[in-house]
Image (cartoon, rainbow, N blue to C red; front, top):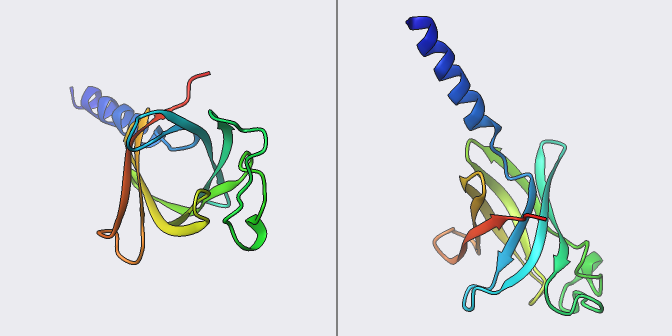
Length: 141
């Protein structure tokens, strides 16, 4: 009986740890609920990054006009907007997010709610001053 419980515990532990934010996620407008884009989150050198791979509205000539430095006037599709997130159990912290609409960069963290939903919070300074987007869904082709 103890062996069965141990095996069940081990399987649950493996399944829980296997969940990750890596993959494609849809973003939505906070007010209307309309789909905005698809962001591909990937892991590189033990940190997580995310780039826009699809826009639902007028993607042909969209560039980051308000961005500064290396992102100025770069195409929105392919633009890396999530940078340097570090995994901490079911949260991903200490990263930044670029808002291509205003060119501003904010601190951010992501929490995996379920294997198909996540919550992203962008903030200035302390996380209590910021904006949360919940319900981002894993993109299904």
